[in-house]
Length: 118
Ligand code: SF4
Image (cartoon, rainbow, N blue to C red; front, side, top):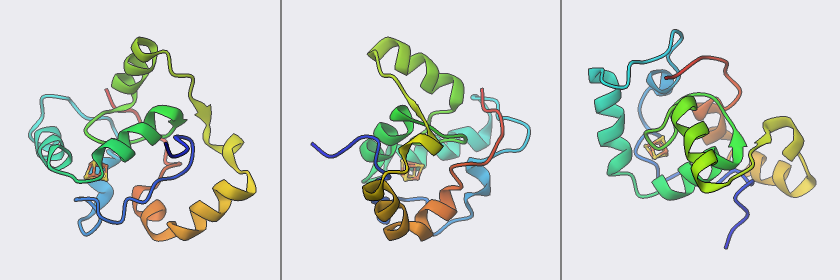
């Protein structure tokens, strides 16, 4: 099993070629909004959704990952007994190499951006 704290290869993700701004709404996003429905549909058909969600559950990132927002992921962590780490604590050499390798995707996903998603 791969390291769940390591940034995964999301290069086959359904969101890679689209404007990922929609995954990082400035003022949060109603989970019943059309935008959220669009995202959930895209993530539901995404071939790397499992890796995307696994990472987002283990590392405290902002934005919508695999159709889940920040609050939903907090609940999932509680239910699953997952202890997430802060993003900056994962910078071991190995993790940094992975970050570099997937730098383009990482930038697109903008893992550090601050916003609130219900
Ligand atoms: S599951 Fe992750 S990689 Fe796939 S479309 Fe959704 S946010 Fe993008």
